[in-house]
Amino acid sequence: NAGVTQTPKFQVLKTGQSMTLQCAQDMNHNSMYWYRQDPGMGLRLIYYSASEGTTDKGEVPNGYNVSRLNKREFSLRLESAAPSQTSVYFCASSEYRNTEAFFGQGTRLTVV
Amino acid sequence: EDQVTQSPEALRLQEGESSSLNCSYTVSGLRGLFWYRQDPGKGPEFLFTLYSAGEEKEKERLKATLTKKESFLHITAPKPEDSATYLCAVEENSGYSTLTFGKGTMLLVSP
Image 1 (cartoon, each protein chain N blue to C red):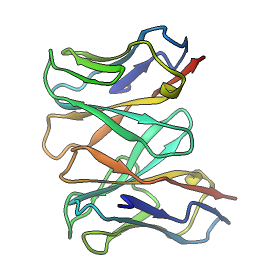
Image 2: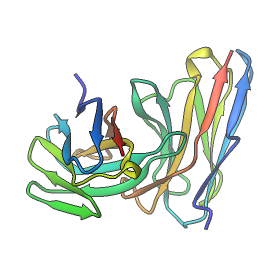
Image 3: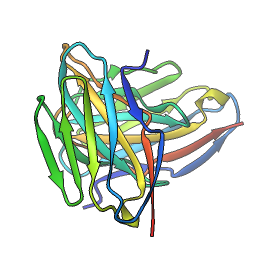
């Protein structure tokens, strides 16, 4: 089992460019999440999807959009990247909302 | 004010030197408290969930305990492979709440 797979692993964007971070899980989990992790800030929730067909804002949703494409896939889109969005992004999934979560390896994004 | 505070920020131990990490929280009602381990360059890995005061869970050299205001992660006779950042997260007992993570404790165990 691959678990939670994120692509890409590294990305450099110029200010104003757009991109989509992809996430897929093969554990038949209902809930999926996008977090960002910054030095000294801990993990902060951007958006989550408690179940297929639903998405909700987390603590820091501004500048991001998400799509729960199907039960397996949950993508995060940056429409117009800003330097403040430089971070490490983690996708996670859990069987139900706020149960044991499995995290991907992360995407290290730099916006210049 | 942070809802979840972890201390110390960093801890250096000698192999075999037992210690404890602390996670204090200020949510009005706790639905669950989670501990994760994170190795450099990797995503967090789930360790434990605790739901009520007095509850304890163990895994190898780790034991997590919970009181009404805080949780401890006790590490007994640590080995270098226990070196990692340990994250605590809480779920507030309030509607459709989400997890709030602390900033973590970076543990380094020297041989």
